[in-house]
Length: 111
Image (cartoon, rainbow, N blue to C red):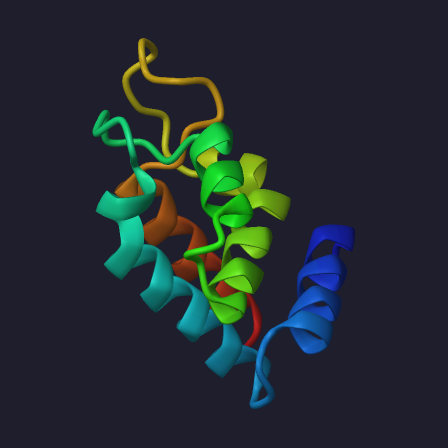
């Protein structure tokens, strides 16, 4: 098992609501899909670090969602590197395609 996989599993078991690791990852995935447009504050089709940080700092963001945002921030580079998209897009921005590819790969590696 690689180091990032160990980090992700440790992070999920410490900071995400109890259940199986796969359940926790699925909860984060569902949150990311449902919240994509709200997190993409500038509407450019990418969730950028600054947008995640703003959501994390917001008093309106519930604690559970803050843990999901922390996961996305901690894994932003790995997520954004999943699909090579428009080179004019923001560096390190997370697209819907990135999320889909990342979570499919992550969940497949946990089977």
